[in-house]
Image (cartoon, rainbow, N blue to C red; front, side, top):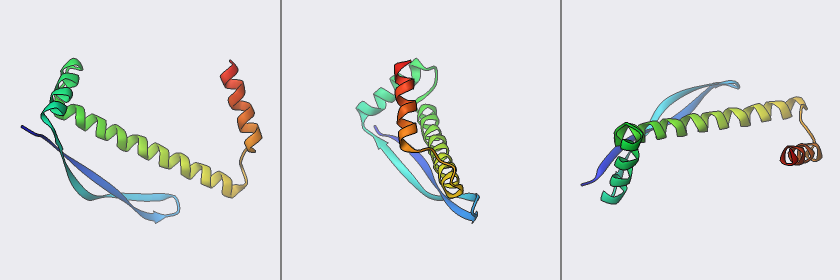
Length: 101
């Protein structure tokens, strides 16, 4: 028995420099082996849900993480274009300070 998951992938259509419209780009069918399905089912039941919901939540989290990453990159690009950035020596000094605390 194979557990099949359909994932929707989205692509961005840029409206202007700061806005994007996300549209469905493609659908993907993911097939799990019997062992993988058993692992998913076990993990899902220990979390009080079913395997399909677990996979859906994981996929949506991946989309959210990707969106936050892209937004962070864009903020960095925008800051660099404004000349608002921190020298790498200052960044490393801050990292070392955080690691020592």
